[in-house]
Length: 421
Image (tube, rainbow, N blue to C red; front, side, top):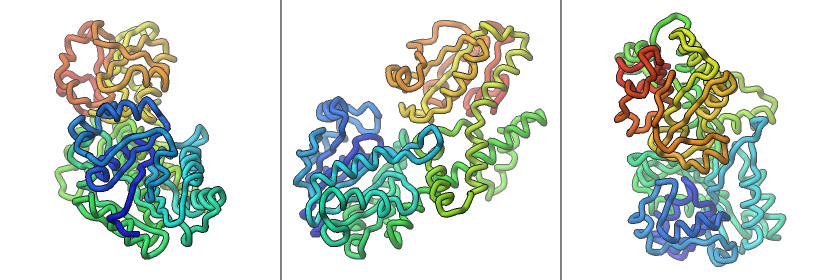
């Protein structure tokens, strides 16, 4: 396929799909597709609730349009799938969005079309799960009538420095020619350059291990925080001391949520177990990180008891509910688990987050965010290090001098904090 003749449809207009559609829309005829018609209408009006794209950025893509009608993308010849790949309640890969997207595309797939997947999956998913759906419903033959590629997303929500174009893009294709085409396509928008993987499975695996590695590193410092809490020393102090060595990796303890780090290791583990291997290290790291919300809630209770507060009816303020700082993304936020545990102990809990959408938080977690902070509290939990939280007068939010402040992020002034994670 001649790269100059491509017409691109980006399936899914979330944190991954929208930045991609914008960049391609500056150079090629591009359609951003999403089944959420409200989202599409917002984008048509240059409104992005994720805050990943400004009005100016949306307007800069002069060849980009948006639709929620599948038949509007029927004349495209490159389809890029950026739908979510979550896990279910059993921590097993939930491929429904990916399968549904593949089924939808199979209805309009034509000879010569290329389908590129960006969604995070286990090695082999593209050819073993997606391709059979595309083939069976389109009556086309893979690698003869249509082709596939895989280029894992590396978007970092909320990061305005490491953006789509400044991160090296891994690419791959189902044939050598298609691999070259996919690589050239992404090279046209990625200023940092590309890395053409040996094959699709290698590209899929590269994404899975990126986040598994971060998960394991964080689980190590989280386990250290559990140990040092019992020793009676500050984990941040220990890390600051150890960090003076040039080759020490400066990870910090905390709650591990979000759409990638807390999910992707399960995809790798799922594939391994299907092949008869039980991954000890990956899953042990997951267990440590998944249990941190319980530790944080219990630690908060112990701090309140030690300060002489009566637990039942004590009021606590949680600052931040998103899964990371300075972005509105609430997907798989572990702060919600801390909130639920504290409520179960009988505490009266307020949650405040100027970044998060209150309606989404209520729908997803049943938590009513407060619009502004008007009360004083027996306990304050800094859960997310949003920039504007540094301007809060934490001392003025305390009920009295016995009130406790638990800083999970090492973000607040040291003399304002009772304990850090």
